[in-house]
Image 1 (spheres, rainbow, N blue to C red):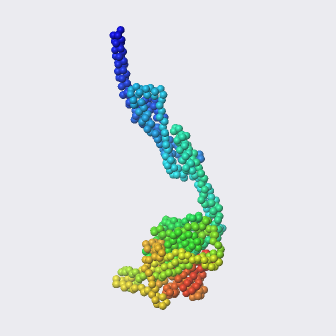
Image 2 (image 1 turned 60 degrees about the horizontal axis):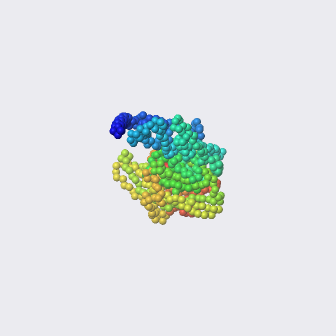
Image 3 (image 1 turned 120 degrees about the horizontal axis):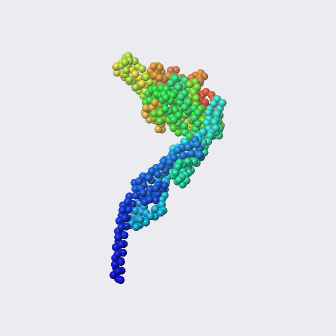
Length: 600
């Protein structure tokens, strides 16, 4: 019996070993095939990858992701048909965030012993395994798209506008607009794509809107009064056609400008570029102390006229530069030069609580600016501006150039000399006629310049040293170096084409053939004012020129001039308060008689 039991056990062991060997042999064959493919029943997102190799699975899944990112998404404003854009999910920054699930899906059931792997395979066959995809969206990308495309969604907002006519001011109504609310629309897009969309088919998203309010409303402009806060006029009757045209062009570019409270106005921004295409002509201006033709010559008279209007309106001056040489259409220290090449500008700010309107026009070769606003200044308060001549600087020695083509003995003055000045401008405030304060407004330095003379022949030319000026007692007057500006005032006369000056009273008038492209009159010193005490009744424009009188010595020269607004629109009067003071009374509408307007 015992022998039979041992014999049966041996037989059973042999059978079991044989079965095990057979199973291992079969499993080894299957394993070789399974290792190369994904088990059937495995999904990544909506993609069936069972039976695929790893490379095939990656290709299939990536193709599915690409289709999602290329899906068209329509963004519209409140569902509008005309305010919408079409783009893709990828354009909005959508991306697949849990890409590691593809590796997990491919390797599912590929670890552990044969029995464990076999069990996983059977489980997958009985119950499908799906890996859920997760997506993320780039908020900054959405914001960038919305900011770039904002204009496609906006309904135009229209500010109220104002125009000066012969019957007063005409004001148009403002109109509100519509645009997208960027922050709320970002949240709406993220929710729609990440939560509401099943990633199948196109998607439409209605963005969140918000109303745009106009920055200028009719009620704002209705505060502008019909009477101007200030007005100022200068004359250019002796200017040629090109310079006159430049003034007309520049004025029209400024006329009708509106400044809301706190806003700044730049003359250059409104006038430039000084080119033929922008309507300008070549006319006389100064560069390096010499007269040249440049496009826009004469526009400094426009900025200067506006500057004086701004002073009378008591607006805040942000930037102002005097000319390098004197001008004849305003008193010293009352000019404002501009130059595109150097960025020299006249800038002011509306420092009132109300809008201001700038009206500019030309008529009969006179340029006028008027500033309208809501004038809150008391009626019993008056202001005036007085200039003070600090120093008179004699022209340096003549600059002589030989020209062998001219006959021997010929002497031609190609450009006249200029007396230099240091001057200051002061603001005086009066209440009921009693002075309340005095304030320095600016300091100006006007460089002296020599005669430029061309002589004929080939002989040696002896240059005569210019004698210093003397006072009435014969005492020489001290002068200072010509390259020393006062209080940091920029001297744009050096290397600048937008400076203006008058010729010195110490030279004889030039013939028209000696300087081309400009129409000149005889220059006048800012202080050579003929008063009623010296001549018979004479209008302000009847000012004695050097052709009529001899130049005054500096001791005879008045040292102070006044610009004062008044209520009546009358011609300026010239009075003498003492031997050392000349006063210009300048009412609200002031015309300054011109002298030399040959340059800017």
